[in-house]
Length: 119
Image (tube, rainbow, N blue to C red; front, side, top):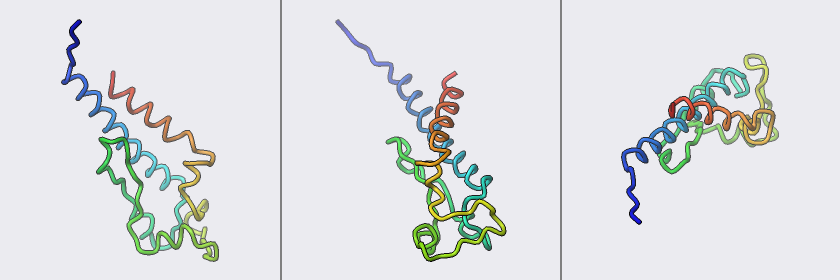
């Protein structure tokens, strides 16, 4: 029996998966901003978020906050979170996508984007 690999087809599928994953990261970031869950005073923390897609081919994208104080705002329980500009602002704003009410949203986005790319 002889097996022939369709390398062009496999590459196309891998590229579609990678691009759908990157698109999912960008959609989650957009949802975070629209949901107004990131603490916001001057906008530096919210603007500093970006999608790190260096390992997308391996199935990993990261949402990164590139400011010195992001860790403090995220983890420090003694910090007061102002909700005057973003009414839904909270510490640990990513938890809503991992264990909270939107935990299925990344999966839904990925499935939608991949289905659209594979048609």
